[in-house]
Image 1 (cartoon, one colour):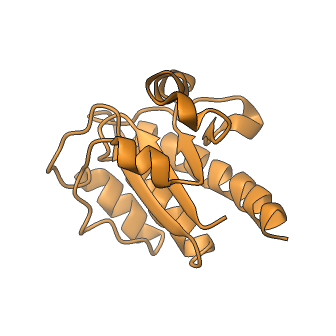
Image 2 (tube, rainbow, N blue to C red):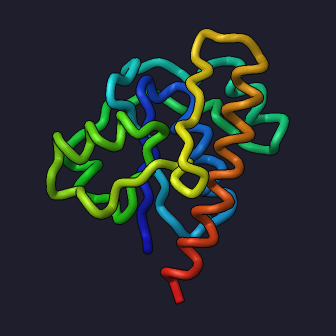
Length: 145
């Protein structure tokens, strides 16, 4: 396992946060992020940047990008934030079936979208992302051995 792609909708909150969390835990991986309806060229949400910083994670250089065929083809594992995103990726890129899962797959949950919402929504999303990243770190470690 060498490359993981995190996918959300706008690529300004959830997938950038998930990317830096996973990269911190497994620095040997190449971890990237993209959005199915990305706010192309936008920086990460200021509250996401602040909360990430409080956890020792840096989102200050993040710029939102749209999900591309090349992203999907190049990733060995794709983790979406919702079931709808997972289905969209699998339908749009049929060759990706079998490597697309939800970040919250283990708990059968979608990661709440905190974009343009209050701090409590961000806190919940961060907690869900942290839990999902932890679960996937265990899976990836097993796949590596």
